[in-house]
Amino acid sequence: MAGGNGGANSANLLQLIRRAVELCMPDLRHYYRVTRKARVVAAYASDGAYYADVQPLRNDETDDPAEPVVPRVELPVLWGGPDRGVVCPPVVGTLCDLSYYDGDPNYPRISNIRWQGHGAPLAAVGEFVIQLERGVEIRIDTDKRIVSTTPADWLVQVGGNATVEAGGCIIQKAPEIIQRGNVTGEGHDGGKGTVSEHADRTITGSLTINGPVAIKGGLTVEGDSTVSGNSHAGSRSGGTV
Image (cartoon, rainbow, N blue to C red):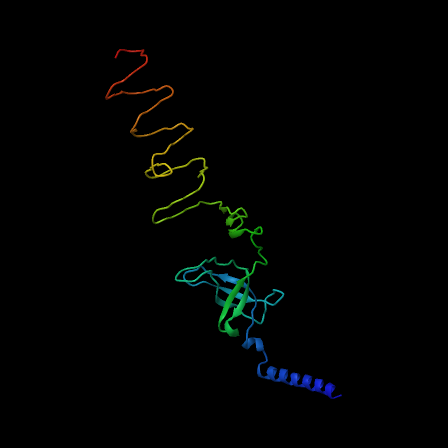
């Protein structure tokens, strides 16, 4: 019987404590906040500050009418340092987790961005994907290849020298390849190399060749021909020399 009365007394004491807390703090969540669901309602360009406005949600992801929009809540960035990080302002409607430092409602933060509602990028197990939208991505696939995809232009800006080093071949595929600037060709070790072409070439300007020239085929010269040195011919026909 004593054990039974002790249980009842404990229940009564717990009820008294609960009632005392309700009287002192009728809305405990107003004073001490836990992580809750939220939705981005406004986003801003990152200009040294990175934040968004969010609407707190119920657990069923409907708007909580008792909670106003929380403005300018800080967004997380990868890495730290002066002007360092990976940022991508979220689109309106993005779901997120709204947290508070030490539960203080005066110090909110977005602790996580959720993919629900928008869908996550497609990625196989073992792949790494950074995607802005479908068709605009950087992907490291399961074969360890780095694949950049965009329907727009690709621009690489380098203030100093740029080096592309490959253990195999470097292949360029395009309807037209344009080079602007002087071109110097060398062998693999920096010495004399070889150039093989299967193409017709048109040169506008002068041509200087330092070394012997071997032509396997006909040669047509439209204009004067000047030879400094001996000229040998196996046969000759046409006009006088």
